[in-house]
Amino acid sequence: MGVGENVKGVAKEKLGDITDNENLRAEGDAQQRKGEHQTRETKERAEAKAHEKKADALEQKQEALEEN
Image (cartoon, rainbow, N blue to C red; front, side, top):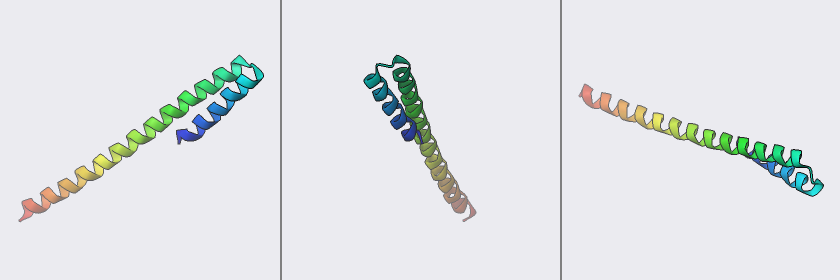
């Protein structure tokens, strides 16, 4: 999700370097940081979801064992 923001940020920063536009460089840098944050957040959500699935599976196994 954040990869697109990161790529756009890099492009803006490089264009700012070429045109000597400090505002464009700063905007590109900020967009890159936003992309990195979004990427990290997406990864953390995926990890949390995987942990939830594992916990659900273990709970079902425990319930099945308690029924016997």
